[in-house]
Image 1 (cartoon, protein in one colour):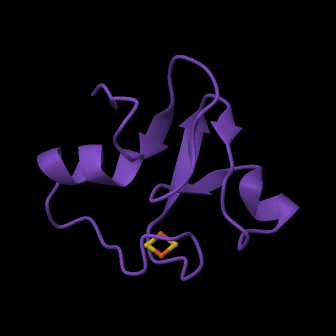
Image 2 (tube, helix red, strand yellow):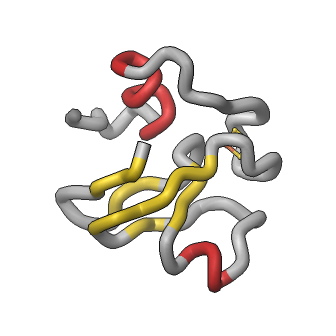
Image 3 (cartoon, protein in one colour):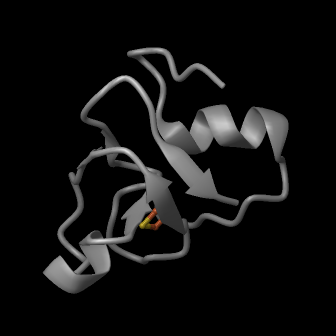
Length: 73
Ligand code: FES
């Protein structure tokens, strides 16, 4: 799916998968954490450790750094 510049990944995903879990939408609860299979993430949260950032992201605030991300939804 395409994520518009003015949308979060979470909002785009929820249009296709309405049951996707979330809570704070501000990057501090961790409810929206998803595993990343491919692509580089622009992490914008303050919660995940460097180790967690190696293979996951908080989709309410973080975005793709490049053209494409593959998430394990
Ligand atoms: S919904 Fe809380 S960190 Fe994303």
